Length: 433
Image (tube, rainbow, N blue to C red):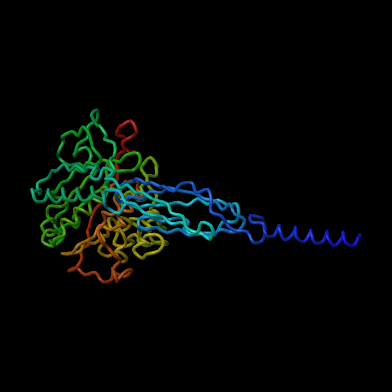
């Protein structure tokens, strides 16, 4: 009798163990991952043409085994970080979704697919709506105030065209500044003859002049073709008033080589701060921007005769643009050809015919590249990234300088103006000491 009870107990125990093993949902080494708690299946992003913006969503592995996942998009304007990964049981994941408006105003839709090893739910779809708006394209206004004996209607139109081109690149409006209580004129800011007061500036005012500087360099005279730069800046470093001046003795020669339009566009870039404000510290010892890094014995980039470490631009947007072009690391800045050229332009040996290098291509186009656009974004301007001209690093890079000839290129001997005053938050003009 005792033996029978023991035998029956063993039988019932075995049945119980088998039953537990067969029960679904029990925990053990044979568990499954489970994708759960998706925060949203509908995502929406709104930004301006040429800009990117990021949103997020999250999910969780509520199973009891590792969950592997990957993400894909039906449209190329969307990207993910991370795009794949593995979650342990109980872990959550936040995914950043970045969408880029590539140049067309309107709405685009994409299906995002989240694929995982969840046996019950291997694929989940999310819908992304991207609204691309103009964001005030053309809202950045550049006003040109002309003076000087060398101006003609045709030459003025070249300045106006350059202003329109830069207004395609910079798209964000900036608060107007009123100078009603202070004397602001071409004479007080740039030293030109015009004393007409300027009451208000909408974004950027440029005083432009074609007149005598130092004579024609080809005839034994001087060698300055033009001079330009920001003269009054805002507290955030953006230019509010700039000066541009070309030597009337040199302009006809530039026109004969079809370089005057490029020269005007180039100099206007300096007025915006390119090459001038990259490492500008005012006389009050306030650092406006700190994008230019170098080492030289005299600690002066523009006048250094040699460099311990050559100058580079370290703004992250520009570094990214350089990488897109096939470069790597910090962006090379010109380290030769003396004051006015070195440290204020992209390196000629690397970038050759890019607009903001220090040499003008005779009878050839000079693209306003994504590199230059990105540098303005690093300086805080709202830019339209798709406004850049098509550009690729030349095959001669990084040795293009050795190939230059007087017939193909002209060194643009220029003097770069630096700021003499800034406008404080109260709209007052404060002269640097």
